[in-house]
Length: 597
Image (cartoon, rainbow, N blue to C red; front, top):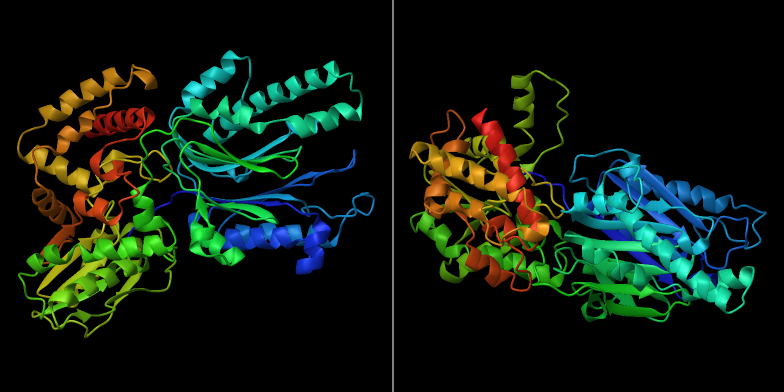
């Protein structure tokens, strides 16, 4: 019910034919731009804080621009970007011998941004561009990533004598990869000189012989985190690489006209009218590279680790029109049937079933289907709906909170007062803020016999450091419930001991981090049911007397429904990388310091 900021969206296109080919076949030399726009709009859910695109023209003339970039902030950033590009398309530089306007090139890249670090401003919007007078040394990057060992990469850069302008994973990655690209270009320059080439012959040799795979293999294995990195070089190479654990997703399609990459499979299916089997998934640690001549290759750049594709992305973030994701979400809902029947004491006849928010609709469909297999009558209603977005321009706390509590509204008369149970399924319960401040109060107005809140995901107990804004352990309602039980049972010495251990562990480097997650001890002495009841006590608003129960998906149910995405660190604490575990300990230390006051 709480909106989470999360993974960014990426889109890339390499046109494999001359622009005149697309003009003749599709009626526009800007065919690639049109497809890029559609791919970005179809991933609008992945980033609403900013957007940017980049373009590279092949075979430019000296003295004329060949690498273009446009960025904008805000929810309407895509519109702003393409409006500006559209204006430039209609006002080309007549002095350019190529005869093509800006952004009408063969290599195109787009990005949608959601900040997970809290850093805002246009300078943090992708793509990032590193300029140089040598075409091949120009590098443009964007990505869907969070790196957990930025500090060690920063130290590596400064040890080389570099002086990064900004401390962020995006800029540091740009400079780190840019440094290796410089070395690759200089290597090709020496080869050209040894062949007695001169002038523009050297430039042509470099452009046609630079191998960006050398750059990737010497940089990305040093990073710890979840990532899909995309890049363009001024000489015309395009690449996309996925992290060795497969945490973040990437899909591609290739034929004799185009190579295209996106964060989600349905985006490519819709944009290019493809069947499911036409779209391929990039493997963990694998790089897709299209060279200067348009030849595509797939190369294993980094050794694939124990795969951990993010299950939470499947539950919550990804587009539900993907065939596999749709079936997975239905299964998540279906599997909760027995737990729900138990929560309503078997009285399905006098129970009303609904969902909130809209992202939980598919799990709701699966839940109802499962119930109807055993019960002939299942009352499925649209009980809760999101009302107009209320502007909380009043700053006084009580009035502001009252306005915020009315974002959702109910369908009056859908529940028989004091007779019907009301069961509402959500895709996940993270912090519980909306439940406490709005949902439970609103549901209580219908005066049900009992309110059952169902989560299609398991209890979220641990932070994420790979691309979702869930990095503070103290924010989670499951964690708060555990701390409440620890305090009530006089077990706070456990928290003191964990703090001492975390401080010691943080003195170690990422490579020295033990694999065992010591924070898991916080939950060891409590059952799921005890934690659920503790949550209810925290979340129950003042004045609400209706019995409330929370039902969560089990870990076993999660993996049964989503077998190919075992990344479950949010729920189990099994972090796929040592950097993630190290940041967990830092998050705990920060929480403990504040808790002790």
